[in-house]
Image (cartoon, rainbow, N blue to C red; front, side):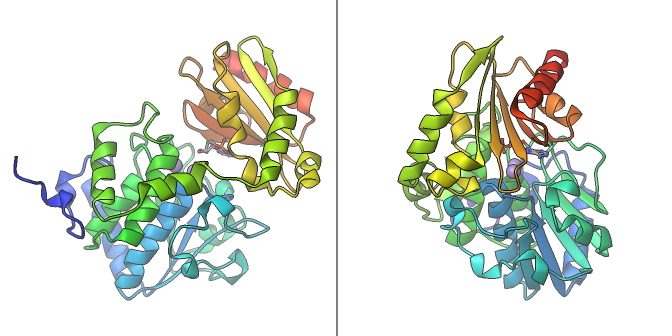
Length: 344
Ligand code: AMP
Ligand code: MN
Ligand code: MN
C-alpha cells in the first residue's frame, strides 16, 4: 500500500479527504476562511472550566493563526481564570489572557466546544458584541449562536473540526499543534473507548502521533496523576455513594475540597470511578464549585439520553455525557434530575 500523504508529519491533508466535518457545508468553510483571512486581530474563546477538547482545539487553531501573522488572543470566561492543572502541559499558553484583557468588541471571534453564549461565561457578552462569531463545535446545537457555524454533532470532538479548519487555512501539523488536538481527541473519546470512536478518529490520531508526540506523557498528564488530597476527597465521595433505581450517584462539597486544599478542577475524574457500577444505567456526581453552586455531571451507558435530561434543566451535552448547574440542595437537585431522567 502506498503511504497516505496524511501519514507524513507536517504535510497538510487535502480538505476533501476529511471525514470529520462532512456535515458542514462547503460554503461555510469557505466563508470561515475568508473571514479569518480578512481579520487582523482575532479573539478565541472556549467554554468555561475548559476540558482538553475546549482548550486543546482553541490553542491548536491559535498556533495556526499566529503563524499566519494574525494578532491572536485566547481566553475563557471563568470568574477565577486559571488553566486546570491537568491541562498545564499543553503548549501555547503564552497566547492565553484572562477574560478582562480580551478585546471588548473584537472584529472576529472564534469559539470552541461551546454550544451557547452561556457556556462562554464572562465572554458570552463579548461574543454578543463581536463583529463576526465563528462557532466551532460538535454539540447537538440548541438555539444556536454566532454568525457562522462550523458545527458537526457527528464529530467525536471539536478537535476534529479544528484540525479541518487548520488544513483549510493552509496550516499544517507540528508537534505542538498535534499535542493540543490529541488532548481534545482523547478527552472526548475517553481514550478511544466511547462509541464515538470511528475509523476517522483513529485516522486523525495516526496523523497526530506521526508528528512525534508522546502519547504516554499526555495520558499520564491527563489521567494518571493527582495530588494526594484527591484520594481523600474521592474516599469521602465514595463513602456516601448511593444506588437508587439504576442511578448511582454521589456528591463532592466545597468543604471536602477545602479540607485537602483541592481545587474544583481536580475532581473531574470522580464520575469515571462512579460510572463503572454494573447495576446502574446512569451515573451522577454533584460537584460544588467555589461559588457554592452544584455542577452536575451525568453519564449514561446508552439507554437513557442524559443530554435531553440536562437540557431540560438548563444545561446541555451529549446523549451519554451531559451536565448542568443547580442552585438547589442535594436531595432537591437529585429529585428534579430523576424526574427528567424518567422522561428521557
Ligand atoms: P462534564 O460532566 O463536566 O464532563 O460535562 C459533560 C458534558 O456535559 C460536557 O462535555 C458538556 O457538553 C456538557 N455540560 C456540562 N456542564 C454543562 C452546563 N452547565 N451547561 C451545558 N452543558 C454542560
Ligand atoms: Mn468540552
Ligand atoms: Mn467536546
